[in-house]
Image 1: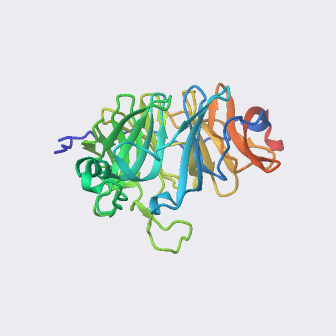
Image 2 (image 1 turned 90 degrees about the vertical axis):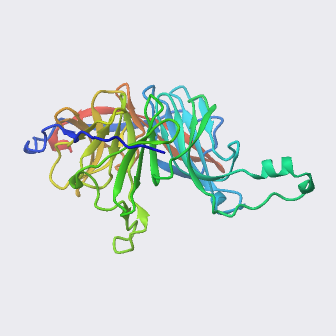
Image 3 (image 1 turned 180 degrees about the vertical axis):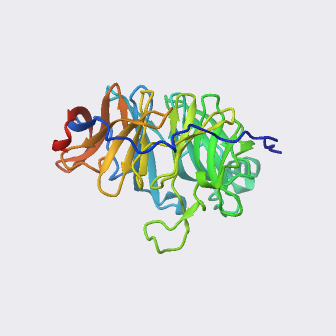
Length: 366
């Protein structure tokens, strides 16, 4: 049986919320230049955003495309490619995992040590049945009933080698996963009351700790209306996990809620970026620097702010030029902003790396 921690320290909070909004920080313009299109990788028509990135600048691009219509889990084909700064491509796929069948991917997470996928699947009993029942030789495999679906975490190393298949404790309903350097997992889901719940699982999938956070730190409900604000709350509200040193930072996009920094030992630190009232964080951009880079929507314009996690103050802010205000920056690496764009070459779709360099601008040029 899984056991929860008997006691839990309350989240620590850096005292930034009493600080009045600061003056406009130094502003920069990011201009992107295209480099040589990637070779050896044909991208799918749809990219799964946001990108993920490791500290060495390797960008992980999720791609969505039509899959072979074998069953509901195959209507969309998902794939993931890690692309190094030198253009080397490493592919990942959970389409065929030993002992699992009817695999449906729900998300992935990348760290400096591992690439993990959250999936639902069934144990593949057909091999066992066919191996032990000679009368079934030549018969088609049994179709999955869907009643034995379980949640699993599939763990690869960054070279693409499958390391483990972890069945998640059934006490936890999981919709998002991250992994600590120790091999323990941070997961996000909801309880029976549909309230958001962050938990830590050990490397075997057993529940170690479930966090009881104050209500003003998370959404009231883990469900959302999706694209239609007047619709029914049938969508799982988005959460973004980003590695930060030995910890993981959780972002609750398009809200004014603070960032939550989780440590492997169970500590939670609240980070409140000192932004203008009404500003909403869209996403956290991975970086190899000590500060955080947050993409912000304040209702009028969109900026990327560099935030000091210790006091929440903005050190700099950045705007993307060339009408690329909604471009998705993959990561900040060695002072440059890295991304990708689709480009058609004849009838072929290619992925073109972009390198953005910041340039200081004055207020009258914003």
